[in-house]
Structures are given as structure tokens and as C-alpha cells.
Length: 256
Image (cartoon, rainbow, N blue to C red; front, side, top):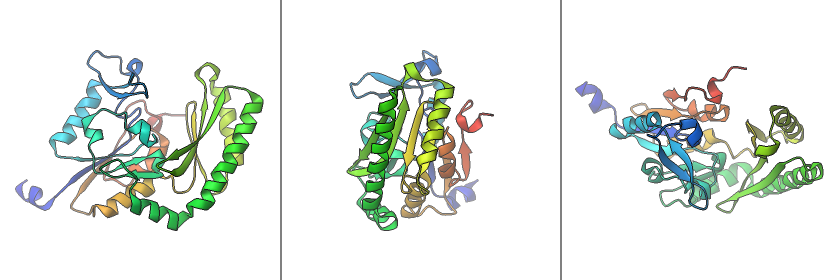
């Protein structure tokens, strides 16, 4: 064991947030849950169960270095109150389109990297065009589907499509999913989870951001990397780790 400790250096945990480290109070269903995130008005929105707290405690005790990897944009991410998540060297937000530094500002070198790889100006134009098309389409239908163009840290990140709670049904979600897939450009990706959809440009990929951070931190064969996530869209970045952890009942483990 002594030799193992000498030869290994660091432990990293790349982790999703929603439905992974916290859920709604209804889902946690325990008086041992703690508030983990709030809405823009400061009202409790997400809670960590005893089991979720225990998982964090295990990695904290092992001096794990946490890197959040979330679909949340910066403003929503900053509402997370878990100390483990608030104070991290980097954070991947907006489905991977943005990497934040320790001060929760856009990592300039990341912006330079994705602009060189993908030409952000061209993709901004494509996203705006797609947003306008979807906005006009769903506004005309008046069927409870809301479309937003998400700009984060000055970067046009992705298109958010959401079915309202009152209008949601599995059949409607399938219809929305099918329509969105029919209008996607070849390099776009659709993330679907319940009544929430995100149309992602090629630079909004969690796995690309995780690979970038791994290279920046020089994570190598003597380091150990865990990943935690709940949705199918998390799997690509989770495969960049040595061990994958998924909550019971998550989309990853669901059977059709």
C-alpha cells in the first residue's frame, strides 16, 4: 500500500449536477436532504440526499479534485451551493460550450481553441437562423413549447427547447424530438431528456471540454479519474475516466 501511495498522485472527479448530485425534494424524499441549489430568486430548487452527500464525502476524504460538467449555463451553475462544487479549479457549463476558470470567468484559451477549431462566427449565424425557425414554428402551433437561444459568457452556446409542465406528455415529447431531429444540421447534436431538449453546435460537447481540461492539468497514467452522470449525453465524457458512476434509476440505466 505504501508503494501504491507513493506512485499515485491525484484523484479527479468529473461530475454532472442535476439528477446526479441533487434532485427535487420530491425525488430525494428525505428529511436528511440538504439544499444544494436555488433558483434566480434564491428559493430552494435542488436537494442532495443522504446518499448523494455520502458520495461527495468519500471523494472529499480522498482529496479528490472535483470538476463540474453540466448543461447549466453560468448564471444557473453559480446558484449551486455545495462547497465541493462552488470551489473547483474549472467548471464545464452550457453542455460543454464554456469552460470557467477558478474565478468563474470564461477561460480565454478555451475560447481561442474552439474558435480555431469550429469558427464561432459561422456557428453563431447558424444557431440564430435555427432559433428563428424554431421560434416561428412553435409560436404558430401555440402548443406550450418554449424556445430560447442561450448565450453564455458572450458565446452563443446552444438552443434550449422545453415543453411546459402543463402541456407535457410522452407523445408530445416524441413529436418535438422528431421535429427537432428533422431540422438539425449535420454537425449539430440533439440532447433529449424528458420535456427538455438542447440543440448543440459541435463545440458544445462535454467530452471535448473534459479532454481539454485533462490535457491542461496533465492528467496521466498515475492519476485516477472518476466520472459521475445520469443521462445518455453524459456517457461520452464519462468514458474519459477510469471508473463510471451512475445513480440508480437514471436515464443511463433505463431500459426501453
